[in-house]
Length: 178
Image 1 (cartoon, rainbow, N blue to C red):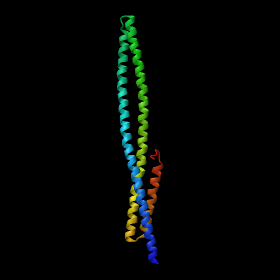
Image 2 (cartoon, rainbow, N blue to C red):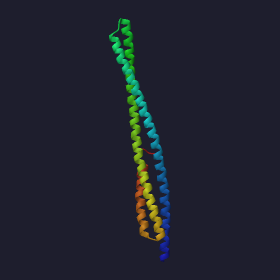
Image 3 (cartoon, one colour):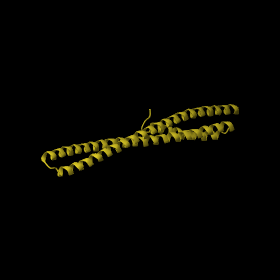
Image 4 (cartoon, one colour):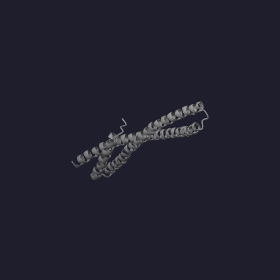
């Protein structure tokens, strides 16, 4: 009778260890997906900020030209020359405004990408944590089977429940990766 109880308990250890291993694989693959997407978003964010800097440099050059045209217009020798400088001045003002608008759009995109990147990094942390707890649970279950200590298996199950909670939270935390 005691052997039957022992055998039933060992089947439970085998089944739960297998389930823990499968969930570990899921958590590891989702964590890898987060890392890959984080790297991609980091590159995109860097490109967006570089583009923002390029627009800033162009805006600065246009504003320097605008200042130059303002000075030239003040020293114009005749009305035709004044009109030409004034036309270039208007063009420079419009171009500077266009660059300012484009910079605002680029900045908004870069900041949104940064927010998404941070959220994804946080999500990946839950997957990493769940992998650690799953591994501890698997180790405790394996040792419990070797030493035939039921309390170690139960302790391993507690770690498995924590790991499952972290995995579930990570799966449904924004942004979703499905």
